[in-house]
Length: 220
Image (cartoon, rainbow, N blue to C red; front, side, top):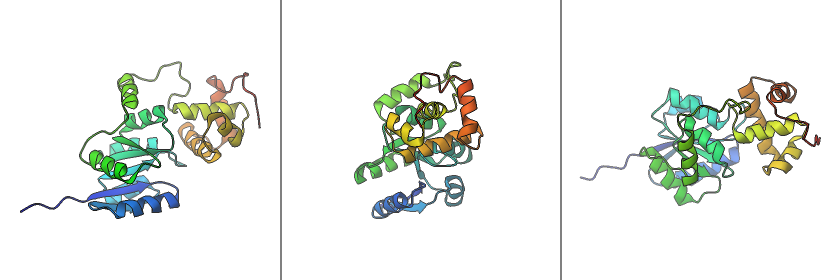
């Protein structure tokens, strides 16, 4: 007698309700996948014990990289699949080093999403070749001492550099390409990692470490 396929329990961690509903509807229509949704990834994961967590990288309060790092300690058997808006290789490398097993781009097709979820649930790693090359280059290598604020990702340092130069969110977004909302999400993650309460407090350690130099335009 053929044994039944084990359902894959999936937790969707995203701070946008529309995204959660859309992903839930997409996955719920597929055989072999159960869906649990929730913004509080750590709490929800411990309650529902999913096989896979589809984790948005850009979330306020605690970004997807930090949430992945904590989940790797709390629930090492859970496969985290990070979702990014852009092909930001450095951010994906940070997530993989934190314990993620794969990456999806927002806007991926239904079949690609399902295939990737099944792959990471089976213990495989799913990443682009260029990300793999970067990851192997970083393995076992601590952040270089001359990298300012090494706990931040490359994109977070770029955002903080603009803020330290006096840029608004909209101005930083013009320089760096993402939407102002994405810049705001980066800032939320930066404030959490630096242990500060806002832009003014974040500027001081940024300038102490060489960000926000005099070469900036200082646009408001």
